[in-house]
Length: 84
Image: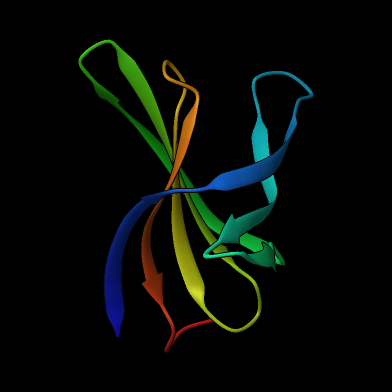
């Protein structure tokens, strides 16, 4: 079941080589989630902001992480605990 979260989170990511960004782990509600796999990623523009979306799994759930490259903020957009 998909659950909308929309909370700011702390993310560890690898930048590069080149313009690539890959999330490695994130903290959500004081729990660290290791990113086992980035299952899909896409981008869009909101005005002048470039927004990067990452669908990731920790092996137990599917998460959508959003990175606003202008504000340099990460948001946990949603969680689907029925998928992995």
